[in-house]
Length: 283
Image (cartoon, rainbow, N blue to C red; front, side, top):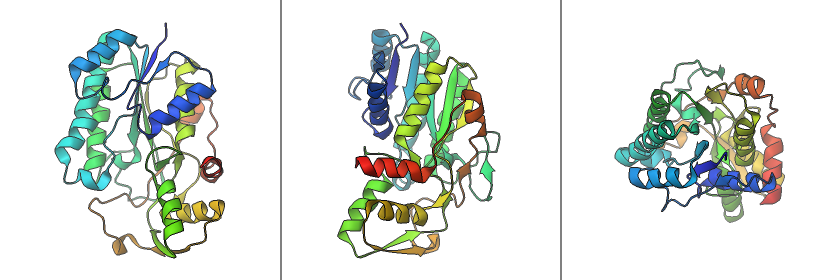
């Protein structure tokens, strides 16, 4: 019985995993509600492990409000570190393999080059710091784990940049979008497919991996593509980060090298704009 349990099932990636699993006819994957599987409640978590006896756990639960985290440090750390510590400890106790989703925001992002898994993580905001602390807890507790760092996640589900732009594009005549922060958009369905591919590949190359879609874009490029593909007519102006100050500092250049995950698991990763076309077609 190779059961898979998803924590953070109601979030964006959790919903993507549910859809991809349904499409692929995977029946041994379970999506307990947060009321049943609160990652901050050790006793509740233990009951989940007792009930499903998972061979695999996927942790999609996270505090992702980047700006709010600067003032809400305690809660961000509880979810992104303590919650991960709780899951990792139980995964170790029950012999489960953990797939844990992390972020490119663990990097400072001040060098224009592809970031590899061996590059030094140096977060510049609370969100990135607490996610890195969670990574360390996984590594400390487990031998059987996959940590997947991703970036700029969007999909048909939850709140994300694509859905926000589509909404604002119909409400306003003009939008100013940051053009000097560069990264790679990632379609949640692609990431969900990659996670399930790893699980069913039977490859046991445990460790840290980077996954985003292929290519490079600024937030301005991303927004322009959203409007072009959706046929939304709105004037879009590029601006500097300094013209739109936020509570949290963000990496200026955060593009990850995906060579390791592609070679290890023999996967092809779609180009970001191609996946965006797919998502907007569904929306």
